[in-house]
Image (cartoon, rainbow, N blue to C red; front, side, top):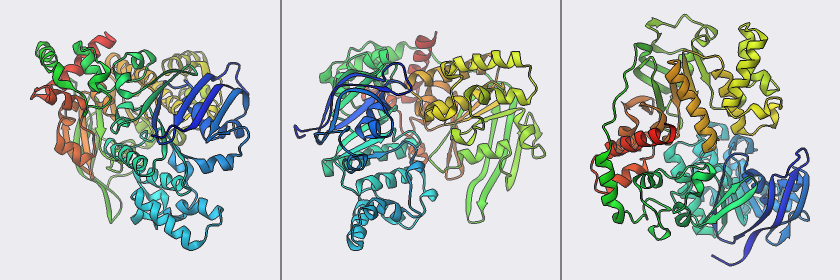
Length: 570
């Protein structure tokens, strides 16, 4: 690492023009050339505002009052044009679809070079070089819209790298990726970092996944202030993440549950570097004292799927001969890699698509004759992309819409809307326009709009994408409460292995259109063969248990999750 600061915040305070209080308070921060830095913190802590200062959107697009200064390569963001800043800082957005310009991958990567009037031969050579680095060389003639989530992200990376920027800024690069693709994305970012000496800044909620490859520092932002700036090893030996409402890696949480007091020299920043041998006896002793986990009993079949097949065209079969039974009161996960057919399955159940073969049953009756509206009386779907669900301009109106259509009295509507907005952390914004919300906040609006209808079955497609740990927990505890008290059956399509372990009792794995496994989450996430085929990520609890000499990794995982539920939620 070179001791040259490429990013400098000097006593920087910023207040958006429409706000009363500053979002950032007296920030002092230096990031040096060649560093890889993770920025974490709860939603609303100021992470995005910090990144908007780095790439120049503040002050050139988002205006407000500021004190102090931010310098990129020694140049003040106030005195440097947005174009010049974009030549130094390349930003890869969370929503990659909003970043594409060209009709093909090659055109999209070449866009910045075309604007700079680069000669054709040089442009082709540069596009080929960058496409090779991010491994999209075979996709250059493809349309960006045809690509998977991981491929789209790589193309977005190529589009900003083609200018040979000094800094790469990633805004939640893992939010919409399956675990294995996310792991590859972090590996690719790490390889780019090492090969090019580019300064890397990553903003991410999924800290454990982001730490798959080492980082130089983790910067914790709380209430617009930097509350910690440490190496991963130093940070894991403290409790500052938990106090800030940021999820620790699972293996760290498990060690602390055992009673281990981690120290920086334990190198707990990554499971692969952790000196676990000194704590192995304690971990084994704790595990053998844990009670046997009882299996919960469920009711009759509420949703049945038999020999279901579907293809968008004759050449591409998305689902083939899928059969499963969902019982009343279950809380289950459907997992698998991007494009495996998980969302297609939910669309078939809800009636948006018609199966080529097979049967779907609701409470024992074939529902092929029911319309989308009729199915919606029993089955509520929260889609992955909130923009595809929202139809009103204001938050309150969007959440109230379903009740208004059903003719519920206005007084009752107001009471129920306010209650669900409080649960989803949206009550302070109830009179806001939806256009003013972040992606994660929009997600909460769509969840609230379905939760308020109290359906018999709820299907949630990536319910926690873009959510910080506090809002993730609030939403999932509310959903879990509905499951327990009202007996609502919950089906969650997710890439979040934490959610799968913590909140579901059963996981169905779909890979390449086939039902690959149907078992407990712990059994699936401790099975290498299933994880590899379905692009899942083996839980770090498996690695911890094996390193401590515990053969029953499945049992250890179940024991810790049961312990965590009991001690964190009562």
